Every structure is written in C-alpha cells, then in structure tokens.
Length: 442
Image 1: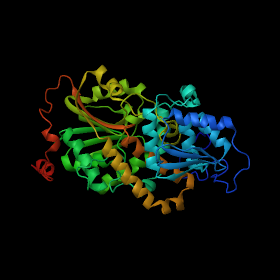
Image 2 (image 1 turned 90 degrees about the vertical axis):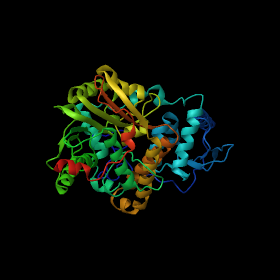
Image 3 (image 1 turned 90 degrees about the horizontal axis):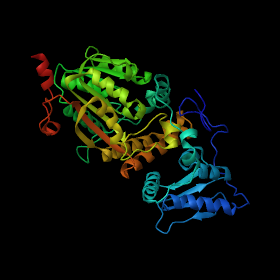
Image 4 (image 1 turned 120 degrees about the horizontal axis):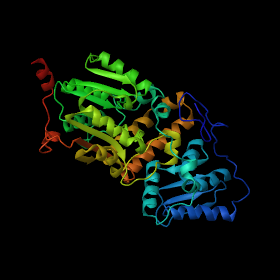
C-alpha cells in the first residue's frame, strides 16, 4: 500500500507502522522552556477555536492555558516538534499525536472532543492553520474513481472480520442503529433499524431489491427472510462479501440474495426498490449526478428508494485526520448537496428523517464493547492501532452529540409515481413476523 504521511494507512497487520515505533512521553522533563512565540501561537490557536474548557501543558509541565470555566480534560504536549505540527494542522496533528503518544489526554475523551466541537462552533474565527490555507492541495480528500474507491474501502473495511466481530452486534451491522426505547440492546436496535428501513420502503413479497453497499449483508438477508423479496447487493469489500455469502448459505438464502463483489456503478437491470445504507459517504459529491442516473435507470416507474447516510447541516470538508487515517475519500454531505442525486433526475423526495442521536447511542455501545475487549485487541494489534480506533469512536460520539454530524434517511420516488404512501402509518405499524412467509407459501 502507498505510504501516506508520517505512517502507513490504518491496517492491523501492519504492526509498528510508525518510523520509530510508538513514541511515549519522556519521564525526564527537558530543561529548556518553550519560546514565548510558541506559547503565544498556541494561545492564539486556542482562542481561534473558542477557548475550549481544557487545560493544556507542555513537555516541561508548563501550563500554557487554563480555562476560566471548569475544565473537562487536560491535554499534554510532550515535545516541540509535536507542538509545531499542532500549530500547522491542528486536527491532523492532534489525532496523530494522540495515537503516537506525543500528546496525552487526562479525562474523558468523548467529553474532550465534544467540548472542542462546541467551542469551535461558537468561535468567531477559524484557526489560521496550514490545513486551511493549503488544505485543498496538501490535505485534499482522495478521489472515488473505480480504482481509488477499492483502495479507500480496503483501508477501512478489509482489515479483518475478526476485528469487527469483537465489538459489533451479532449481525455485524456497522451503521446507525434505531433505538425504539432507551433500554434496547444494540442487537435489538440494529434489528429495529433494518425493520425501520423495510417499512419505509413498504416491501412486499416477490419484489426485487438492489442494494448499493451492503456491508456484511445483514440488511439484504433480513429483507429476504422477513419480507420475502429478492435482493441483489453490491459491495467492493472482499472481506465483507465473503462473510455475507457464507451467512446467506448458512441461512439457506443463496437463491434469494445475491452478493456481488463489484462497484455500484456496475448496477444493471430494473428493480422495485433501491436502497443504500452507509455508502453515500464514500461516493463523493462529484459522483452524485452519476449515482442519480444509475438509480433513475434501475428503479422501476412505481419503485421506491432510500438512502441512509452520515451528513452535515452545511457543506464542510471532512477532518484531515479522518480522511488520512480512517476513511480516505469520505465526505458526509449536506441535504442540499444530496439533492444533486435527486434534482437532475426529477426524483421526488418523500420523507427525510434525522437519526443523529441514535448514531451517538450506537457509537457509545460500540466504544463500550471496544473497551471491554481491549486486552484481546492489544494482544493482536499494536498500541497505535488501538488508540486510533478509540479516538475515532470517541470523536464520532462527540460529533453526533454536538450536531457536527447528522444521520439522514431520505426516501424518494420517480416524480410520476402516485403509488406513494398517503400517511406515515406504515412506518410505525408492525407486520406479523410470519406474514411474508405465509404470503410466499400461498
């Protein structure tokens, strides 16, 4: 794989993927103090992001910043090089520093990220950093061409099913769950999410469904089993497709669910339903019109479509750290940007729901499970890998709790389709568990 930045792309098989291994804090404080200009620049950076309630110290235990309000956490910067990296590119350098041990956090990692998000959203200015001045060129997102999409997906999803199996639910669903009650388990909430999607699409036995980006195949199998539909599901992750096919075979669904290891751009044929859960983030706005044309071509005149995606309230580029270390080529769109799929192809938007707090709760479950198996993780993967995932999960919780990220479910249809729901009653009315099977049998 191509080397990027100070270390290789995230992958558990690449142990000690830092040039000098994990750099831990030197227990002996350096005798020289930071220059006044460094302290000044760091304070200006903190002012630019709204004076977050965080104590910041340097390698010699010098307290550079102490908030007026009660602090939620403390951040220690352990060497001058890390400080200058932080001044040049705050988001990227903070993530890298936390991962390689040159920045340590005392306190709750979720609360720290949430506090920074809130203070930054209230700030009147943005940090005068290198990634803002030259970000379009130095830290620009990777593209999502046919070739690069495969590399981008491999980076995150093909790191081993065993890793995800340790902390996801039993169905291996890696998207936002739907918590019908506060006491629902993660397993119950993921099933409820799949049911929620199926009801919105008003599935009925005998229909044909095409799914763009199917993960480990849980939704495709659920639709086939629960609603008696035939599903063709596309995904370019080899690990996920292999798992999905194996599960379909074990559940005797091979004749009703077909998992295709291919890009969504290869979808052909006509279908009653188009569904995509958790894929649009990896498409890229520049490809939305192409995706819209594919849906327009494959969706039957009286068909329904649903896109479930992480999004934002306004157009804003992804965090450089997320782009480089977690999801290369990813971009959560605003609703206005999503209309680039629907407007050119004259789709009517029928329903929009925002489930961001459900995603925050989903991520809280994931992080709790992750921490419960951290000893098993550190036995197989290196410490930087574990820190990377801890920061990613904690930061994502904070982003959804503070509204930095949204979770949109959009239902749509051809503008000429009058066979559309009259009310939303179908979303909240449960079907009999065996109804689809009975209808098939009859």
